[in-house]
Image (tube, rainbow, N blue to C red; front, top):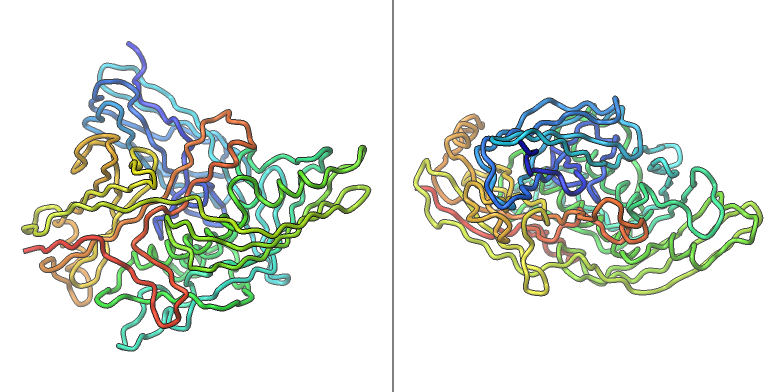
Length: 502
């Protein structure tokens, strides 16, 4: 028999389980102990596969400890990419590229092993100097002098109606507006360019990892207790106006996925770093191009001091601009070189409208479901493994439920890779959780639906580093949250559909 035609074709990625968001470019950072390792398995044949099992076989780092779990699929349609996830502990993971191995089995075929790389970084905070360091095999990036728009005073405090804001106190979205980044290559290098982190993303990705990890650890500490975080996040941010406010919209309530809302908002806000520093080539690469060292010199350090202004608030899928000025310095064994730039960059992780379909009325206890099309700016649709997407179903009493949105032809999804992502909620299971609340909540009434989607890095293994670096994943291209710089407005959480349970 031949091996089952089911493989992992793209790099697995990290999901933080408290907020449910993908980490920048899918990179795993051991500052957050517990992460989910997610991977798309693609049926590369023209026929459906039956009675499929998928399990995590091994990882090339004993410091990464996955939780054993076997995934079962009665059927996987032809061409479908199914998303599977494993919980894993990364507390003792070593920075660098690590191989992971998965095994798939199914009727009529022998088993097939898929081996892919994951990227692991290590972020730490030094409270004495108020600096963050992000370490990878190729070197260490130190980030300091972070400036940004701090959360407005309404974040986490009662609003005018006396309601508590759903986002946790003090962990609202900080929109970065500048920082100092120092790169210490390991080892020092000769020539114009040093080795890219993981031989893949630009150096700026490590800076956004720092920003996201700092935000997420604070959120995790608020959700689970500070003892769950492994380093201090008490660093200060130099505040610049305006503030970003994000409170509970009218009618929203409490529930664990409140931390998903905080995480999404922080991820969208931190995306301003990548936008300001460009996808085509970041300030380090451009500075290196402009400052070739003299023959015989080796580069022992580099520094970028960057400041930018945002004429409008950063929002998912929008082509918002960033007016940036940065100064690059190269320190070699023989001299110091510098290069300065002032320009405007624009977010290229853009998307069109979200087309939503959901039933107006559902009888208890039938499943709630939603289908969504995430449109591209050229009129096409994201499809299949292009996105990591999820939906929040909000019960009439305020409790939230997080469910995946997939385009794999399973469940309520009409067909694999057709650009229609679907998700559903089992009301029987939801009702048990609703009854456990204090006071108990009811299943009957108006349910609200909120949709979110992040793009996935689909760069093929073996792509030249300077080309691979231009493809970045983990950006929100669709979100029910909208940030605003208007101090009179909260950040609205907009429902894309309503379902009445009768």
